Length: 343
Image (cartoon, rainbow, N blue to C red; front, side):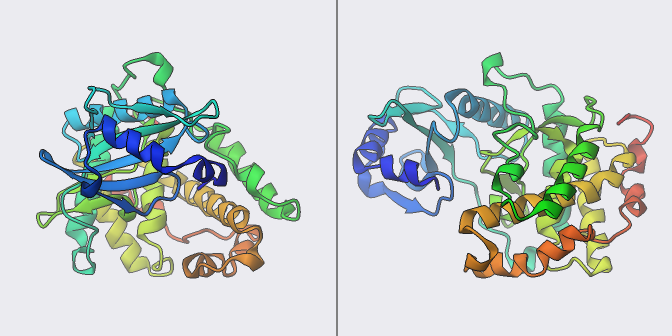
């Protein structure tokens, strides 16, 4: 979290927020939060999640755009954690921080179920995961913000793509790989059937699943306008982590995911060839973010980050694929729709 945001937060901000949502202090519990203060609370109407962010990170318009899209998706039958109004009937509440800026509060239904267990990590989950993302992409084709001012940013906007700001000056080769990659990606077509508002972070840490494999996705803070295949690639990046050299598992996971996806949305198989590029984008983005967050590779102390960074610089500089796999070999998973959609 931005140290400036953390420094401005104080008990009075929370007390005012609880008042606006009619929450009793004994009914709320602090959860982990990376970019915002996240709480779980009980209410006579059920269990909910309260998020308190700040305008230094996201503007009022961007937050309004986020909850507007979430509730649009929920109304269309997508498994997402719907935003709920405050006691005053507002989906977004603004609390002045005393320094000319404000904290931004939003509340959501708590997702049913819990994180997917090891036993649930199977083709049934992969297909349900694909159906959810497919449903969201099908719905977003017709989405227009309730207010044009609420439009979310594009995938390559300065507020979203910050690799060049995060990379230190002594990383010219990595920066060169990133620059070449961006030249390729920015030239891709942006048709209605391939580009729209996407979650951008639909990994397993951002959804709960119940005993019947019904998935509820949350944490839409990073939603942007981007390619549908980018959203899919982000799922593959994390979903296949630890199995990057296991082609049998890669094929099982991806084929089942895409089979579920095409049950809800049509995507031309030609887009499969772009998966390596979007995987590389996330690989470089995460590498740069870790360097920036810790102030250098030699200062990283988190076990997960240490494992990710092991040999990462050399792999990126050598332009090695994040996952070396024949993605176009999965065309049968999308082939039923090849004539109905153009890229």
